[in-house]
Amino acid sequence: MSFKPANNIQDLQYFGEFGGVNPSISDSSTYTFLSAKTMFDTFEGNADGCYLYSRHSSPSNLYLGEALAAMEGTETANVTASGMGAITPVILQLCGAGDHVVSSRTIYGGTYAFLKNFTPKLNISTSFVDITKLDVVEAAITENTKVLYCESVSNPLLEVADIKGLAAIAKKHNLKLVVDNTFSPLSISPVKLGADIVIHSLTKFINGSSDTVGGVVCGTQEFIDALRNVNDGACMLLGSTMDSLRAASVLKNLRTLHIRMQQHSHNATYLAQKFEADGLKTVYPGLESHPSHELFKSMMNEKYGFGGMLTIDVGSLDKANALMELMQEKNLGYLAVSLGFYKTLFSAPGSSTSSEIPEDEQKEMGLSDGLIRFSIGLDADIERTYNMMRECMESLNILDKKSEASLV
Image 1 (tube, rainbow, N blue to C red):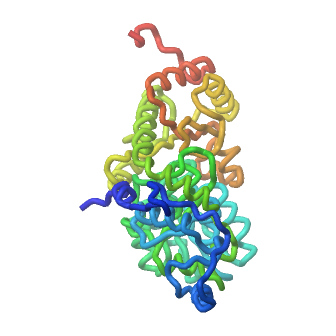
Image 2 (spheres, helix red, strand yellow):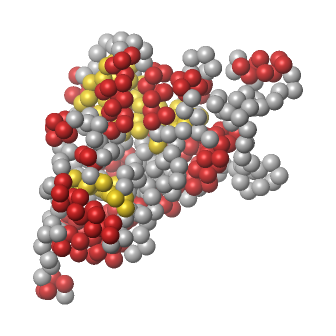
Image 3 (cartoon, rainbow, N blue to C red):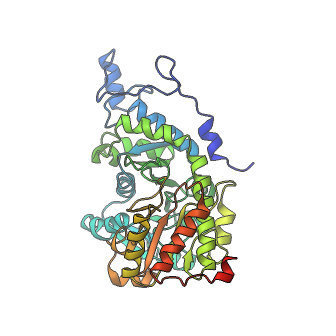
């Protein structure tokens, strides 16, 4: 049977303390014990169902974590206060001084900055490679390599990782394959393809309302317990704890993720096909022209499509900025970073979300000045949206005006 992540979310049943259809929110930072021995056992990690201190865990955070684990098909999960609050503890839990990471070269700018600029202070080094070339990935592995890191669909170039192929390499060399699945929730289930650990920025599609930041680490019970360990757990000791009220809010939004992802994907596919037909350099995994189109199809869960992210290249940063400002003026979306909102969001990643990557490295990986990254929204009339976007492009001479004959 095929994996059905939305069914796993739907099948969870959490009642509130007084029979509410939503679980009660644990609005407490600390918890009482009926006996001193139970407190001791909880510190030692031997008291199931008991809560110690909300930096460690709380009922609200555990509800959300279990729902996300069900979605990804892992044993359990730990939610955090941000996406980076999930990524950084995972790397630090798996690596120590002298260890090495092999990472995709096209990743979120914050992750890149952490691996490039911060972890060397701890004597942890990283090799950045073209993740789409498995031979290059394997050649970068050394005897000190501990982690193979990638994004299912990369930010911002939308390269697609061959998770099965990477998992085989990781297993061969006894590495942990860590996959950031932020761009493709529900569409791709990395653990089912062989990944060891899955990370999300909950800020994006999963929450979907651009009103909070959050993250999650999905993995085995053993690894999540290690992250939470009071003595040497990176999540516990670094303190990137999600607030219970936010956890409850994200859990409610998670229940509509399957509907939203279907619409995001539908709208993005429509626009990508139109933009490509107009002659714009368009990158979207759902286009047959995408080099990893068939790979994505082979990995995807049915129904959820190829996601809501696409890029176009309009030739220069000046044109990109002018177009984004005009589209915002016409209420087609917002000139803003992030993704997964009901409204379309657009930015020039070279000067925003990927600005941490030096310009020479941006050029080497194909991140051009004129690139615009779109997070396509939930527009009810995507044909109208396209026509208005095209008018913006025509007014800025990015596209030629359609002839009268072509409009008939």
